[in-house]
Amino acid sequence: MNLIPVNIDSILVGEPLPFHLLNKDGVLLARKSFVVRSRDDLVDLSHRDGGIFIDGVDAEALRRAYNDQLQTMLKEQQSLGVIARTRPSSQTFRMAEAIKKADIRGKEVIDGNTRIDWLDLQEQANFMLRDTNPLTFTERLEDIHEILGQQIRRNPDGALFALIYLSSTDTHHYSATHSMLVSVMCGLASREVLNWPDPVESLLRKVALTMNMAMTDLQDKLAVQAKPPSAEQRLAIDEHSTRSAALLQQLGVTDAVWIDAVGGHHQQTPGALRTKTPAQRMARLVQRADLFAARISPRAARKPISPAAAMQACYFDENKQVDEAGAALIKAIGIYQPGAFVKLVTDEIAVVVRRGINTSTPKVAVLINRSGLPTMEPIVRDTSLKEYRITASVPHRDVKLKINLEKTLLLTQSPQSDRAF
Image (cartoon, rainbow, N blue to C red; front, side, top):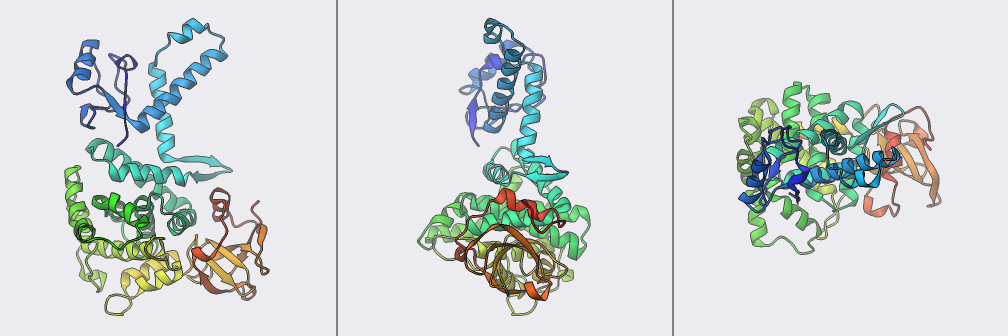
């Protein structure tokens, strides 16, 4: 957690606190909404353990709100003396809370569509996975969980596109991106194929988000480590499921199914889902999605495989039989998923932008023409048409073209035009 010291003069006495107050070690001093009764109480808090701190996200929101307050005073032509004496007010703190929520949710509405700042959400997930404070951890988890749930309902192709593309092309915040992708994949399989009830789907996505919490640092290191894991690292990998379950309990999670699913998500348990307990069913689905997401991700020590090949690998279980959980994932996200690259019968290279009427006929956007040159703008093709059918999956490493994620995401939202911009 990134902690920022705060001056006690910036804290309003007699009004509910807008943020948690923490000590230098991140230990809670005063909960959000707590009312500090006097300045003496603030002084006492600040002297207890090396000062008063707030979370870096809260500090940034407060800084921006305070700057907005000063800008407003300048526009109102108030005197520089008055402006210099100005301190954060109740309105400033309310504005800071609104800014924080908007940033964490990372969304803005454009042309009636909800757009997510996926890079910002990636940062927020990274903070969440490293948070050891039960209060702030729970808030961050709920925020990220809610955003992903909204995207699964409103624009699932956009969520898949962003997370598969980021997972396949970048090692930055590997663990955070990986957990979000597995969460979205499992949510879609649960909702669209397995027809599990909403509360089960919701809990399943939390399992996926928190499955690797105990090895977040190690996952990020391994993504850029050229050497194979050391004996010590291998032991940490082998124990991370149990340790993640224990960490969740320390952070206040009491749901036994959640804990058991996280603890068992690396067990190899083939077989029909109906024969398993609720936690085992969740763990199996997470395990298969986890396998897919890991195989498409670049590592310094090995090359990733194409998303289509990774999906085929999780389709069959440890006994070389069709796996029910893996099959559900394929039906939900397709053989060629949004964010994956493909080659068409026209010799064009395209990126998948929307799932199609079946698992092998998505909508794609051509980025490289048959001459091997980048197109002036993406051109949407329907691969269910014979003249545009897919002939091969293309690994991300073989496409030497950097796409504009923000612009290309627009193609996941509206099928009305073959040219989006």
